[in-house]
Image 1 (cartoon, rainbow, N blue to C red):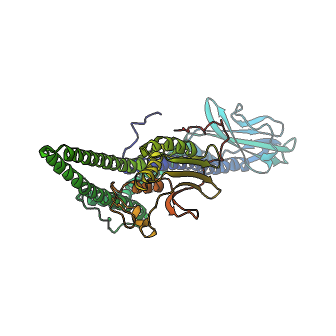
Image 2 (cartoon, helix red, strand yellow):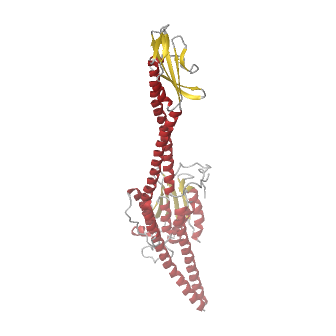
Image 3 (tube, one colour):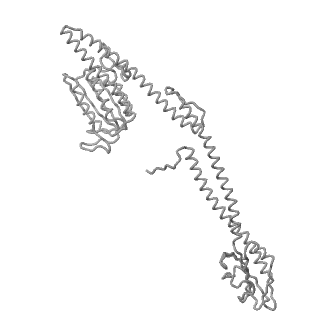
Length: 480
């Protein structure tokens, strides 16, 4: 890409440059038109004088003894010679030059001259000349016929008049162009003043002041103000969410860390082997909880970050579900877990972020295995024209209906009716909710008719038709 370092960097400079180009183009066009019409005007003015001189010469022709003679109109010729050199020639009906310059060129055809002055351009004695030719019928000469009068004038005065008129018009055009550019610059500066005021208002604000910008501006700037206020609103929402998340995370981390400190203190003073082993097991469980909480906090921040900066790409949701299911089942420890996977097609492509989708599906399976204590899990992927659903169904007790909405909030740990508060951070389903929002989908819950509990992830329709076995992914796609 070529760089145009000469191009103005400011909006004022760019606008003035554009206006200057338009004004210069218009001025050049007007200057050309003015030059043309100045030439036409001077041509017509001097042609009138030249025609008058030719007519007066023709009127002063007379017959003397049957021979054509001329009484030169000195006044008419002197009027022309005041500005230029003047030449004339008179030819009788026999084609003999009876007066004037014999070598002065005339028209080859005199038919038009019989109707009135016939004008032409030519050269004579190394000068450009303008000629006017007129014919007069002379019945008294021998033989009777048409006498042809040609009067020529050099074009210096015409050119001078054209130049004078052009210069005056060009001066006016130049003054108007300068005035237009000056007025445009002032108008643009005045029009851009509200933008400068908005810039000063925003620059003077405290970073913590995320109130909408309120300022009386022209209607053309309202869209910009609206976009700025929209950005400020999104930043305010994001900062509020992050501050709330940090506060909740600090609160959630404080309790297990305090428990760790207390358990370490008790363990260091315990002398009974049996009680020492029990306290050590409790310490290991607390360490596991802290690790799990830290991991989910980082995963939650990672999901939010990827939602904002990572573009979506084609993802085979069926292959991704199989992979995550294979990695998650070993977390069931010694339990014998029955797993089933069913899909309407071997490959189902969606536009998504594979890392975030893996995290979401892993959290759903973790909840079923670790909190739901399920030993029968079925993952079903169904595609229709309207939506794509990924259902994870287990035989655990599930979440009570009145808690479904709260289950998607961060740090909400919901126990089953009659059970104690479960371990964990309460971030699993909140992460799933964030991922589904980023993919234009939603999280739902259901109690199937044949028992159990289902977490249903609903996506928009697939980006393409399902592909058969062995088919290649779309261009740019990747299978994880």
